Image (cartoon, rainbow, N blue to C red; front, side):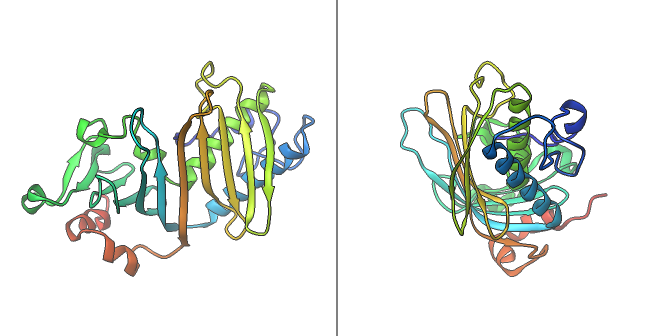
Length: 261
């Protein structure tokens, strides 16, 4: 969905925002609407909340429709640890049982994969490149570093920064309640400007955690590109909490827990 590290250089690239950990201020130098200010404030709060956490665990729901196929919602047990380590375990669809570990800067950038079956009895963990056809099966645009809440915050912030700097971004507050706030961002130049992840992005910011826990991305034809949600989010549960240890394959857990050399 979104790349990594794109908040770097916010202030250098755009005088609309003053220097701070998120890249936004509550009082931009240029006039903006109430919806603009509220959305920027939500992103700032989300980024601050994300900066404070050390790790999280959730059931990740991922729907990315494919042409001429019934859309399936993948249910994935997801664990993320800073600085950048992720474990994903598929609970349904044709990928059920698949488990993946990836840690930035380790194993030559390869994914450590466990797939139940005959091969796993002989080789319980395979290390595969991210551009492997087997890895990309059913996910042609797959990039492991697009996964996670932090990546969405950074990507959404960058799209808005880019759009507002060109006066080519429309922000709306769709709904606000005790549970949280839903916002919408429309980028008219999507398709012509490849900075943007989508033509229209809807995001729900949770009131308890201040994090974006639901996202929907649409193309110019209003066809759904992807829908993503985090359920049963648990923050700062530690590296080896019981639910994680029950989920992960033992051989893959050794890879996950190994120290960098």
